[in-house]
Length: 527
Image 1 (cartoon, rainbow, N blue to C red):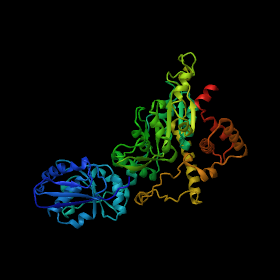
Image 2: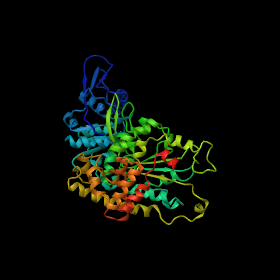
Image 3: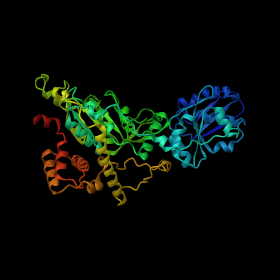
Image 4: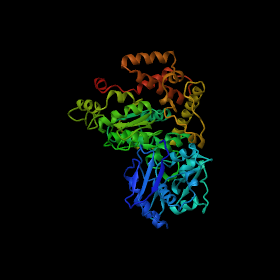
């Protein structure tokens, strides 16, 4: 997510081809010479017939991707003295993929590169037209020049064609919050589950739903994005950086709706937490500031689930491979769903299999205690009765629930900002304009809601009253709560107090928060 400049050095000397491309270039970069040759010819330029050596400096850093096509083509033109204004060429960062006819295609990583142009005191960046809107978020002071062809870039650098910098329109870039096709008013029954979803959305808490097939677990999870508050501009910029590197921004702009990722249970460990040869971000990072939904949780590879423990706790995923060592943000809200056993009907004696309750112990035992300890809310989702299905749709919609969630989040944001001013948090620039991104102010671990708080901040905002503390102490001794479970209970209680509009955490909030703590499978079976 942090771009660094690569200097393209070209020397045309005596001798015949083959040409040499050095500087730790991977496959797509090595193939660029074939694209550049055709693009130059079809744009009316000559490709050198003498031996050419191309170096991508710094030579000890691996280069990947197709964004080197355009700077290679312009560098070849400069080396042949066709492009005479070399000083002007050095003023700009240049990137873009060339089609064989000279057109310039979109690339990944335009937003971090535009940031580099601003922070590196370049005059601007020349990039594909379709990436110009994305890069324009860096704001005024840096020219963002979108070009459609190699000929257009050449004529601009020669002073033959003027180009205007893409205007920064934050309203157009950010757009409005997304609208969802599903609504809470479509859910009949499941009042406890809807309450738990509201609490999870209000505080950013992790949630696990356990119930038989057809009880509505996936349907409930699909309605969670509709009650989450839209991304703040600063959050949209932060997420846009990650999306730009991973796959490019959809439509060339930043999104206001929070990501909702739901990988299949056959996903591998690198797919979930990131990795591979190039150290790509995984699902837990692509869901940053949003929801990671894992349906059929015990069916996931156990190693993949265990790899999620560190990102869920720290808010970042560190990928260490032979070829790459990178850290991606991973401040996600985990929502998971599972059946109580393999057949799914453990709690229904008339339909349970012959191995009950042993089958439930084995199936739920696939989830380790440390992973369950990181889940704040665990609820049972019973089957919906025919009486509930016959009822008219509930009057409360997602808009109504979202209003309460937004009010609770606003209270949390003001409280955390107050703690920040008192020196209990790291001082972070609070500018919500493009200047935040331009100054590269990103703190992935900065608390944004109750689920992110810890240490002195949690102690300051979630101290329960005397009755609440006594209840929590007794419950911790009886249930054997770990220190992590103690703190997560306090976070949930603080969210419940925010939904109630209470200034302090009371016994009632502690009691409800404790009701969401799930006992270990063997304890549950014994009960």
